[in-house]
Image (cartoon, rainbow, N blue to C red; front, side, top):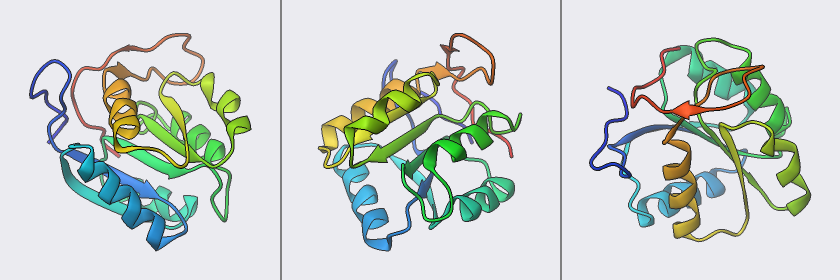
Length: 154
């Protein structure tokens, strides 16, 4: 099952990987996504980058939403790991950060957006819809292409 379009801008139910050390924050993200009317097929949860990689090895996801500051690894290091692994290179990523200085570091990756906490449901919806219209092309590519509307195999 991949991401299909309800319309030109609305995704079908997403397979999401949510990465945050705090179970409370993961619950808040899920609630915010539901309030934003983003349909979720499955939500896989991980408390660290290491757990996230384990989930990615076991299942396909359409989007990763991760804390910028994970306990075992920086969120940008997780993005780098995704981009250098061919099976995961096209997975869009949203990094949540409490500080504005983190924005610049991720801007160079066209398949990654940084959103600043606290954020409103509309902001996360806009970020998800924006990323799902791109196909990340992998390391060294200068631009993203329109997303084909398919899932990612591990």
